[in-house]
Length: 599
Image 1 (cartoon, one colour):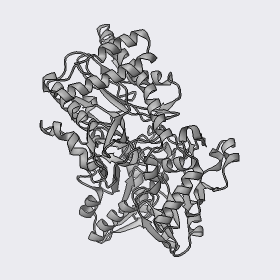
Image 2: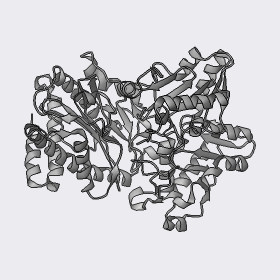
Image 3: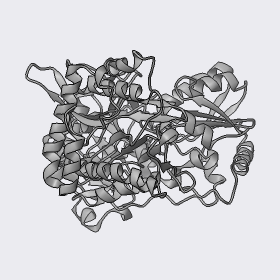
Image 4: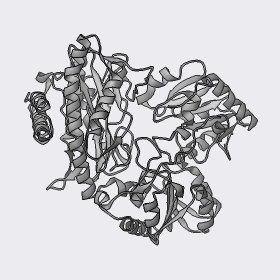
């Protein structure tokens, strides 16, 4: 958690504005990104949270002398207004009111708009550049980040230990992956690829790290060539001695801070270099252009290669979901008994206590490493905030009359998990069961979908939403995201949602399926399982379930379900019961038998 006790938000914003004035800047673009454009950032890089107080995982601000314009997506519209209230801020939807449009409407002729070139991807930079051109303003790269200049107690950069990821879990050697990459560069007629995404690099080099909570990957950069060799820019003091001594000849170590200078030295005029325009710093493109290289902007080769899991990785994902399912079932049984009993005794269970309980149960499972994200443990109206997080000041009670939602996952030696369940203990708010039934029908529609090769996530999103749309309901978040193999729980490039995403869904990819519905200040509903994509005998693709955890049925309006929907939930629960029972204590077995009974 950030320590802002010494200075108020007003004082921090005032100090930043003074710094911008000294730099002759009229505005500063402040994304949540670090140099790796990731969703999760280390405390050292939580500049947006330090300045504004917004703690969500996606957003940005434009700071001017008169306002701080905050832009967040649909998941955080309630949260941002709670965390960033007052006259300092204006609030905007990241996609419906994009920041470049705001800049074009509010910037004035001659404005100098500052940005950190390591924290802005090329495609974002280009949008801001076009917006500035419209009003004859100018983007100005900053040699140092102005937020760092006004952050006296800024945490140090992360220095998590880096260790080897064994072949028994990875399924392929780093050398083999680099040979495949070299062949891909040959096909693309490219001499090099620059990659700055930690999960891509960890996958490529078969290493894991600990620089950011929940994400077992190190901060580093790579320059990989058509010759199968790679320059790895990383702080060598992070490396375990055994890893340092065993690095193969095809990996050359360079200091982390030598990244941009080395690119300028190693890349010659006319050489062709691939970068990802959405997931690399614009500073990379600028450095390559400075040395005369031809920059090829294309979605990452490593990003797509990593997304298609090999057979060892997929078996690992199946194995860890069995262990995770045991923890979920033990938690569900505990919650069902404890919430009513503790409320009756005058000592209700809190959101944080439930969050701690699922973590305790996961820690008892073999191979568990850590949570895969900060659990969303949310009772009543808190569940309407899609990415709600408990804190010492924000820790509601779970009462029998209020529905509860838990979105939680784990990092295991063999893979990564993520699931969401909605719970009820007694009577429910008006409209809850109708909405819950629609969410289940949406979930079922996608879980059972067959689709042809060449299908992309935006092609099938509406199929999931249809049961909600039929009732005039919807949700303002994606329907599914990619999931890494003991890497990021939100993995690119595969996803399912409304926005255009030109990535074919392929066998071996792992995604979530997670429709929901949220009624502000009242309740939130979400059902989420992870699935792997498989190819069936006729060549069509389908989703194969990975998550093993009971789904509450007491909130379903049985008369609104089709026969196929009833058969599916009964079949799913039969699988859950069969696979989990041998790993459960007798009391939990009895609870599970009742919880998975046919409807």
